Structures are given as C-alpha cells and as structure tokens.
Length: 183
Image (cartoon, rainbow, N blue to C red):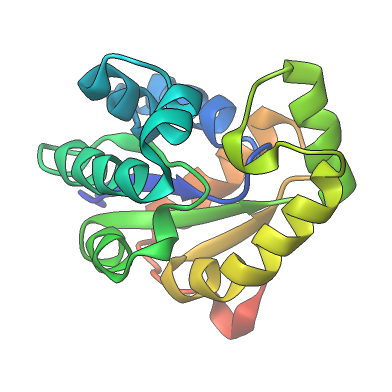
C-alpha cells in the first residue's frame, strides 16, 4: 500500500467507526486515534459529562483540537465522532490529510447497534432515538458526502468486510466515489 494518507472514518453513531477503526489499525500496524477518547482524555471526563456541564459548543472546540492532534503525525486511523463534519475547518483538515470513509447504515440498524452496546450518546437522549438519528442524518448527510472519498453501506456487512472495502479503495489511491457509487 503506497498511499501515505491517514484513514478517517466518519458517520452517525452506531455506524461502526470504532470497530472498523480498531481492525484497520491492527491490519495496517498504525495507531488508532479516536476523537471522542482524545477529547475525554484532554478534559479529564467523559463526553456525556462535557455536554452536560459545558455544552455542545465547548465539546466541538475540544473535538476540533483532537482532530488536529490526531492528524498531526504520521499515518494513523482516526475514528471520529459523528458530528466532526459540522465545522468547515474539520472538513478541510479531513480532506487535506486523510482518506475519508463514510460508514452508513439504515436508522433501524444504527439504533439496534447502539442499544446492543448500551452506550450513552448525548445527542441521542430522549424517547425516540430513531427520530433523533434521522434528524442528525438530515443535517449531516450532505456534509458527510462533501468530505468522503467513499461511502460504505455497512448494514449486512461484517467488520472484516467493511475493513476490506476501505482498504481496497485506499490502496487504489482514488479519492472520490466514481459517479456517487456506494460500496
């Protein structure tokens, strides 16, 4: 594999960014840098606590700093938070320094995965996480599309299959989906 760029994974919560990121990092022998983990380490508290105590805007500031730090060294795999694309500076940095794979799945599959992992997601709190995910998708899909080099529909695929698809495209050096194709 001759492509020297890092690989960044974007998408909504539950799309598989952390799981695929771990496997990609293992296969490539690269470090995995998870922006939510970097934020929590820098702040000395978890993401839900940051949202509750300081608000989303502060979290987004910390997230932008985490992305800059993650992409400042040599090649790595970056598992991003779902809202990383909300800031233009983050989108520009992703396009400049990483091969970006958008991991996507139907809302029902995302809800099932999130429930299976029983993780607190600040932006999914409330009675109807499916409606909230749909709202987030509506607000972010164009931004994911703008920044991604490929989109992988993960529903029905194993983590290995998603990883294989990302590595195949990464190895070609192609940096945009031909004619909007989804893998």
